[in-house]
Amino acid sequence: MSIEVVLIPLAIALTKEIAEGISNQLQHGGQRYTILPTRMKDEALLEQALNDWSCSLRKAESADSITFGGEREATFIVNEEGGYDLILPESADREAFADWVEKVELSYQHYLQQSVYTSLIEKAKEQGLILETEEVLEDNSIQVTYILNG
Image (cartoon, rainbow, N blue to C red):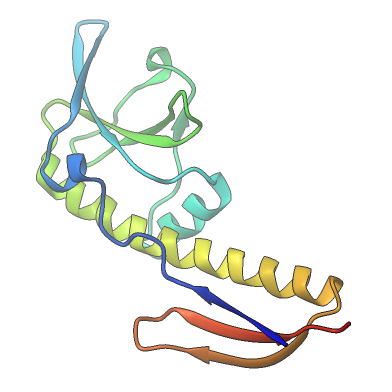
């Protein structure tokens, strides 16, 4: 008997809100900000994804700590669900940042898939499963087949 597991690349498309350029507004201390929600929740994976785009993570715990050094700067803030939202100055080019966030999320999804794959392989080995085949499919999903001992 064998078990087949397919790791499908996680949602590549951005949330509908980002894709359509819809965002929330925040006003604090006389300044207005734009909030772009993301699907990213793991800080380490977010940092890896940002490194792919020659950026570093800047995280704020609240609106009180948000400051911008220029028009091309943005800040991630942790939302109530534990995910990261991108905070932009009102004057920022939302479309350009939405395109950039899409690229970062693609990198993030790649690192997330790698993490899930590594965890799956380790847990299967711990459970005594024997890897029979492993194949990368055209859509970059990974298909692994295990033989059950028992």
